[in-house]
Length: 198
Image 1 (cartoon, helix red, strand yellow):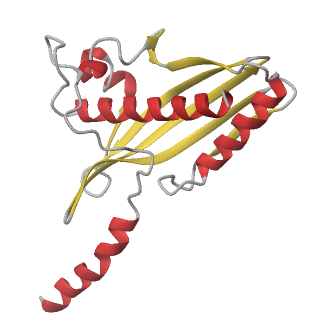
Image 2 (tube, rainbow, N blue to C red; image 1 turned 180 degrees about the vertical axis):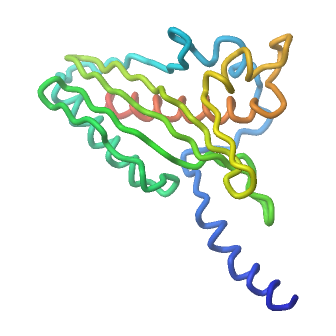
Image 3 (cartoon, rainbow, N blue to C red; image 1 turned 120 degrees about the horizontal axis):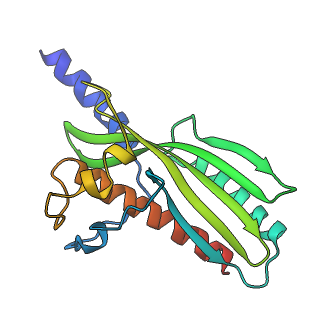
């Protein structure tokens, strides 16, 4: 028993170090309003987050170079899993696509790690003066250590499943996935906006 306890104590720093959500900022008393109806957009039945970022004074090639470099950097961040990579690098048409697998951590306390593997794709279509960006193909692989379950965003975080029946608050279980996903998307889009509008 003593050896088991010592082994568990030695393994704890590795588990804690593996969870790095540096992109995430804790916000106290955060309102749920931004997570309610319409916060998760659907196009033809698929969850697709999209934005157009204006980049005054930059041509398509410059925008492509900035976003290509940033996506490459993102694939190497500590919260990424080794399958994160660039999947399309079309310099002639100024389009870059990346697929990501990373950890979304809901709770990280001693002996209580609640997280999901978060898979998604980012498509950047660069034009003179702007970039059209989409984040789609969202999948969650949850509870891998015990009873692994896979969820598609369309069956888990959209308005039908991610909110209660009255659509006045987040659903009990899928709501945490919805909140973290929206926060992550907002972070990525804001990061791109800051880079392109420098």
